[in-house]
Length: 429
Ligand code: CA
Image 1: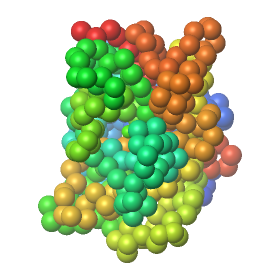
Image 2: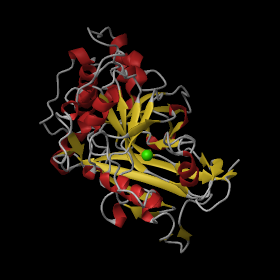
Image 3: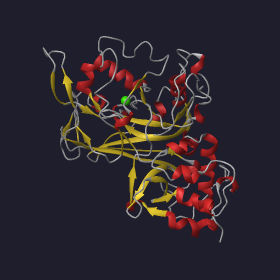
């Protein structure tokens, strides 16, 4: 019987070779062999959270399999993946950098495709329904951008009707703000309605209480690894060395709190109470077939530090409210590339930390059915949505469940699933 080899001794699987897994996965499954997203899981038998890799409806205990090679004395030069994976977050793994991410993915592909590894690996595959999924990263710094032109225009029209829809800086730099990393939660975590100050324009004074305009924002989140030193920059072309992978992200937003507090320093308590991300981090390599050109940045031309390999991603999102699909945002329409956002984030010398997370900003398109927030879908409540059960929504009510899913094209006509970001609103405490 052959033991699973460690990455340094593995034969490499070239990306151009279609591979099939020996695991029980239908060919059209959203989590086929070309996906292999990373997450953190535990089981009843072993409650220690550790890194898992999803294949079909199974979760591979990646560190346990990597440790088999180590126990067999097969560890060669290079990082010890078992040590990185037998921890409670992906941070140790994303710290190892792009070359190791690539080697690890080749090794995972090999052990899940070559029959010779089947007997050794199979005992470390757990049915998805038997595992508990945890927050996949210990979020270091969290930034949220504002990269959709249609979203920025819509918000401008709603909140600043007397001014130009887009702020004058919008096409010169990807606008963002620093958010609260400690309140990023994994899909399935309930969200308590936040309380705060609000004051409508006609009100004589602000009042305090539970938000009455609780909203969603459908986004992608980018997980960063390969920490950099303070004082250094990451260029657009270097960005993919630090973009580990992608999650679905719901930037819950209390519009009434936000509207009263955001001038002049930007979002604060209207956003910081909760941000939901999917349990699976899809590696950037799995999205190779989803790379698309940006819609266009010719007018105006961006400054040289924002130029380079600025790719877009053809990711299709779907937003459901209590089971009714209310929107299908298209990430390919985003004006700014994640590579440009990362370059902009570091151009002043700000360092990157392993486990940094940045959001794309609400993904909205030109048509109503592609808008990524209730603010835009209902035009600030003026055009409410009717759900399948006949109820009407301007903003979220207690008990409402929002589920965001996403997929992207994979190789050979396959689809890459990104999982879901789901949350249910609980009454204010
Ligand atoms: Ca946002």
